[in-house]
Image (cartoon, rainbow, N blue to C red; front, side):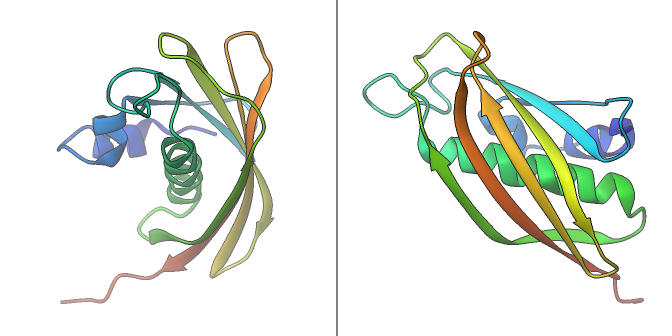
Length: 138
């Protein structure tokens, strides 16, 4: 999935993705996209581990990038995000999120996002549902 157009939009102004250090990556698979995020002072909790909220934010933002790449001219917003965290990641490591499109409807997309550490160990599994909106003409 080519996310170059969406990455350009994201990098135009400060937002949650840029604030937390997310980097979005295109893939050859049309139903999959990826992102990386270094664990640092922007996204760790006070004890030096990746915040579970930052993991959920990474998953929701990545699924939003994927839906936006698939639906040019539409607005894609997360309406449901739920996940399970199974392992801690220490500051200094980099996590990789891989999002797979489970269901692509006209108004809803469902994604499964697996987040792994640099050793390839599963950190979190997250399910994201996006609502696809047609912008109102002004």
